[in-house]
Length: 210
Length: 129
Image 1: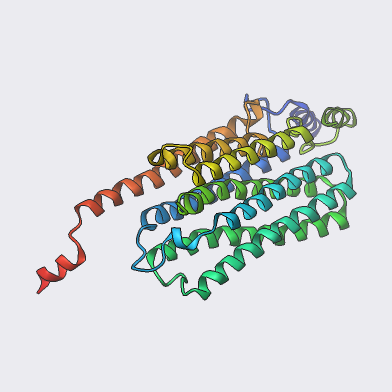
Image 2: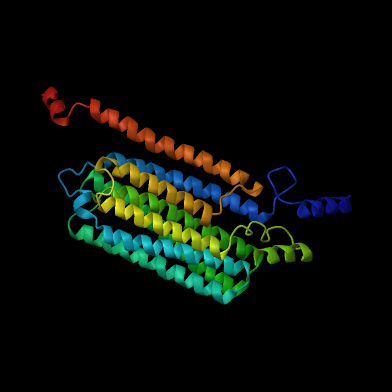
């Protein structure tokens, strides 16, 4: 009975993973799928804040408008930092798959630096707005702005902390299967943040600065 | 590189969870993705800052460029593709997009009509007097 179960399990493991009912898919694909569903729910959370911002962006209550507050050059540098960090993150996953650990560490360090650059630019922008009296309590437009951009910034912060833990774990445990799955999940998270930033840049900065 | 990795997996008979779906990713995938993303971002900035497009069409142009760039990110960075392994991912994405469109377009539509039909707050105060 147990030998039969072994045979079945072996066959299941050797079967090509597919949605065709060929048997259980590899853990890596299942983990990626589960994390992808989490990311989509996160994007739906963001969509509520995007809708809020889109509705409220004209409600300045006599305060400063998007056109007066936002600088495109600043947003452009932020975009560049985030795009390049997504690129280095992807190269990091490739290096992990090829067991090139020093390349992996280099890519992760670059990803962290670029992510931190983005975050520090965003914090300095927020500080500048607060110093001008354009804080989240000034108008409905600014409340929506700080909620939307702040939530994205919070995600980037969590991503940077996750990256530090990932690097520490990789250094300690090496490229084991579970470490590689976590690296894959981190890269999915980081790329998804980039997608959200594209929408944010377009709606908030590019459409707002006109 | 990935091909050799995948074949060594089958040879050694390692368990599940080993590099099966990384075959679609390579250095050039990411590099092409970065190049497309940078191009589309640059195009967005040009459209936003110049009068290249008819002014009233600029928001639509920016939206098109943003959606194109999200597509680039999905395909080149997140590797959402037509592979059988991706069927579930694509279905989940389709449902996610459906909900996002429902939330955003629905909110804008409803709030736009509310705004148009709303009595202004000063008029409400007049009525309460």
